[in-house]
Length: 91
Image (cartoon, rainbow, N blue to C red):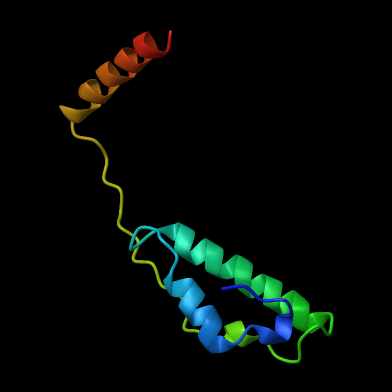
């Protein structure tokens, strides 16, 4: 998909482009990229490059946050031993 002018970017073209993003299902990168693109189109409208943002018609990306649990008493020493192993490989 290539576009020469901003007005060629339609809702359906943006939707198709965004559907092609390859990231984890609940990746915060999806939401972050979406915010960047939305900010770009907001800037375009603000500076009169576009009358309306085609991105406004897209549904927001929601990310289900999976809580990070603390390490158990067994997992903590195991994690630290792996850190030592990595130090040896790097050195």
